[in-house]
Picture 1: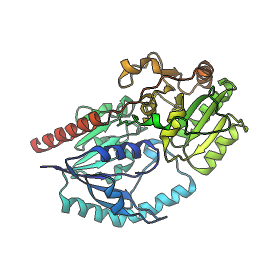
Picture 2: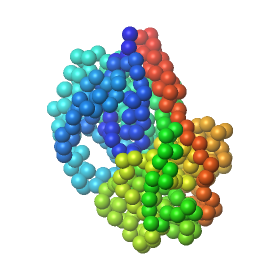
Picture 3: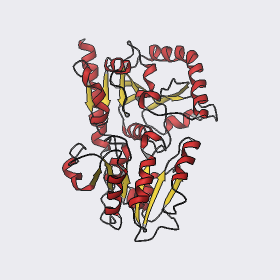
Picture 4: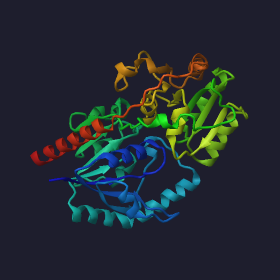
Length: 373
């Protein structure tokens, strides 16, 4: 009998990690009966039937106001985002009852929460599996205790797992790399265009939300200090307008730095990129690290020693350049080292099939433990 799973997510569209990972899972996860909960949109209407039709196993899509807590993972909202969040919180007081009814009526085997920012929806009697795609900043937070008592936790790397060390004995968990499907990136070679882009330009790209927690300011300062003239830094993504404006001001109109904004098809960015850059304040392996590695890019990220902390370290050992976390001078030296070293030999890979199998096995383990308890 197929598992019945309710997937709850605060994001489904865009290039951000949690949304991309869930889309890939739903596109390839068969032999289940799935429903999907999305955050209510106050700005425009959605065709929920069309969304369900994108995913073979998804039967119904619901819209609810969701009590998203970005503070727990260190993301600060702009004033408009705070108002938007407050509207969701107020409407959640009504939709909370609808959410409970949904679970009770459909008798789901698993309720999958796509991020720890949804922790306010997790209750003791819900068969919750939480996907830890972000780092909880305070290891002593009661959120850690709450989530560790669920049916299971899927960590995406060692950094997201570390705050849970004190509750390791009582939680059921797996560390599972995100799904990556980059085998078709080669078809986008040459699609990206920019006046400063030539055959000799070394392209550094930073993809994702433009926010202080992502280290955007550090990357801009270090790039300006260390990168050569024939280098291009693409900042792909969006964020609070005042913070994006602040980051733009740090460039002092440096023509080598391009704020590209949101990009519907990130694969054309990866096809043009030589080095994917992470500016995280501590060693952290975000989704863009593996998206880059799986399509032949090199990666620049915070860390010390050999990059043995990444998945498939043997395969990617020579594809990662490390710098001291938070140290602009250390990162500038890496930019200087890499400028002029274009990545010409590319290999395009996918791990989606193996990922879906591992995820499904973990859910089976969770259900076996639940029946035995």
